[in-house]
Length: 241
Image 1: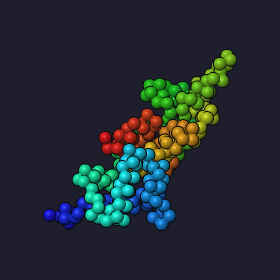
Image 2: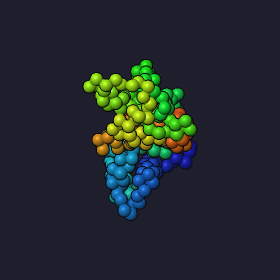
Image 3: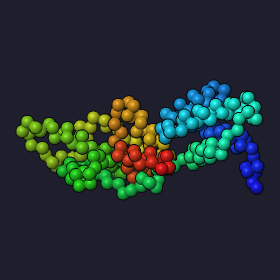
Image 4: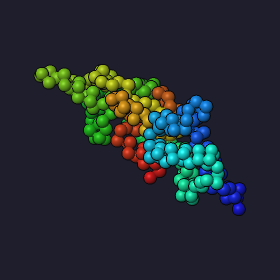
């Protein structure tokens, strides 16, 4: 029989709860002296939207913890289902799923000197709404989107001929949100990507893409691109469905 098996249910529960409490406080940079567990949960939820399905349950666990600690260990005892559930939450926080390998893929990109004709063709044949733009030295300069191409073409509706040999860098000037992208490490947690999309949505701004690199630098080779269309998959991985 293991040491854990010999523990009383209350001890197993408190061990898991205290571990969760410590993990959330570390993530939110808060201390017990200043912030209640309930408030910590709300702060953590802003950093990790995937906590939303278990926030209510964790609040109840917080109440149970207070009952056990302040009112006496013999007054309440968690059932096996509760111990299993809190252990699963603890494990997910201790071992959060990472963006790799699920979102590693060959990345289609372009150069700022490429003719917009070639980029538009790539977008049409690959069904992309945006492409990362890299300099000759491998520095990520931004994104070229179908929205920018549409605005550029819109300037020619009065009869002027659109020069399809126009370089990408000129069309990039038509981007309404030129910084609507992020660069993350492949080892970053899935929750970080979810939080980035949510943050932009809350501000009423788009997030065209998250480019993945091994070190999170703009001058490193892309290992994958995450777009808004990948959000359902991000949620599935975060919740371990």
